[in-house]
Structure formats: C-alpha cells, structure tokens
Image 1 (cartoon, helix red, strand yellow):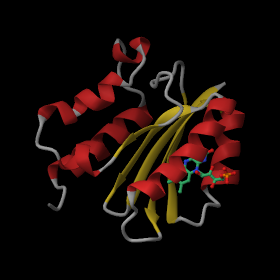
Image 2: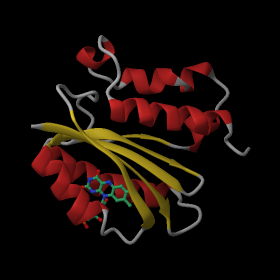
Image 3: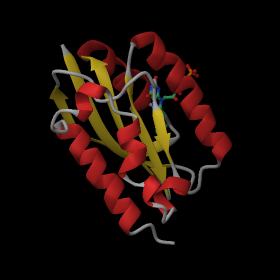
Length: 147
Ligand SMILES: Cc1cc2nc3c(=O)[nH]c(=O)nc-3n(C[C@H](O)[C@H](O)[C@H](O)COP(=O)(O)O)c2cc1C
C-alpha cells in the first residue's frame, strides 16, 4: 500500500548553512533511494516542511527511526498520513527547495519548480491531499518570505 506523509518541524540551529542542508539531504537521499521513497523537503528561515511517499512500511520506518529522532530538528508535527493511489514525485529520492526559490520574485520559482518534479500521472490528476497542503504551505512562504 502506498502512502504520503507530511510533517513540519523547526531546526534546532536558527540558520542552517548549505553545508548543513547538504549533509541532511545526502544521507536522506541515500536511504530513500534504497527504500524507494520519493518526496520533497522545504527549508526556509528555520522551518522544515517535508512530504514523503512510498510503501507504508518504508515511509513509517524512515519517519520513526531516522526523521523523528534526528536531533537537528524539533517540534516535529505529523500533519497528514494518507493512502495514495499513485506517486506525485518522480525519480528524485528527495527534492529540495530553499530560500533562493522561496524568496525569488521570478514566477518560474513558483509552482513551476514543484510541477516540474511531479510524475505525469500526478500532473494529469487532482493533487493528493498531502501535496495540496504542501503546495499551500510553499505558496504562503513565497507570499510572506520576511525579506
Ligand atoms: C529535516 C530532516 C529531513 C530528513 N529527511 C530524511 C529522509 O527523507 N529520509 C531519511 O532516511 N532520513 C531523513 N532525515 C534523517 C537524516 O538525514 C539521516 O538519515 C539520519 O540522520 C541518519 O543518517 P546516517 O545513518 O547516514 O548517519 C532527515 C533529517 C532531517 C533533520
């Protein structure tokens, strides 16, 4: 059974550097690839939002064993876990958007970035519950990026 899981959290260090983020992403992507997990992570001004999708057992295992227990973030709040009929995200074992995309005024940094990462099936269907929540959080961040 396929599921999607959406959570929010707050980084313990107030401002993570690209190096910090790359470290998180490198190990995340390695494990996600092995477990066939796809999704996307946002980091902006100390807040994380992540959507994970894959087999229920793999997603729950990674969330509980590696994400929930990671001391680099806190106030981890699972917002949604839903059964899905198809994946929204393609190939990428964990896409990432950060400050340059959130704070850019270029329209191409808007929905385009997210849409480019979606599977053809997801593009042709209504967004899943978790993905539409993820998209609205992303859009809110873009509207009030606290420049
Ligand atoms: C915000 C955030 C997102 C993460 N996302 C993932 C993820 O998608 N998949 C994963 O396996 N681990 C994820 N992690 C956990 C770590 O990146 C890493 O896998 C864990 O610390 C253990 O890595 P290691 O065994 O390579 O040392 C995340 C951690 C944080 C703080």
